[in-house]
Length: 90
Image (cartoon, rainbow, N blue to C red; front, side, top):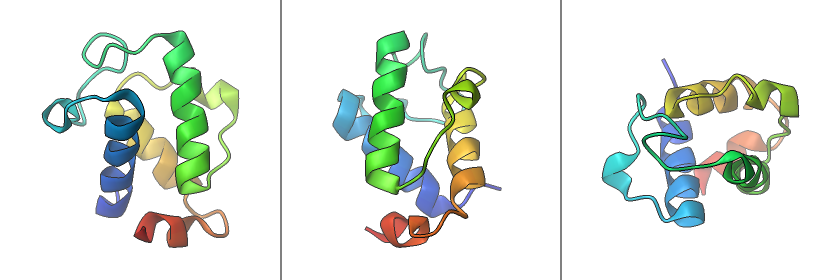
């Protein structure tokens, strides 16, 4: 089960960074088809997540991300990095 703080923060990053309506930000939403992102947007998403949550994502891990749930899971896995929990609170 994904931490609700992670879901909230990722959704906030997606809403603010890409102006995606909150009602479209569901776990099963595909990044490219449902949310309308392209490969450049995927890189921007990575940068936004790194800046706003404090994680460091290996670009190769990004290749396997297809849905918003995949993003939640990836951030959840990386949230053990020092300082990440504090950024999830804001």
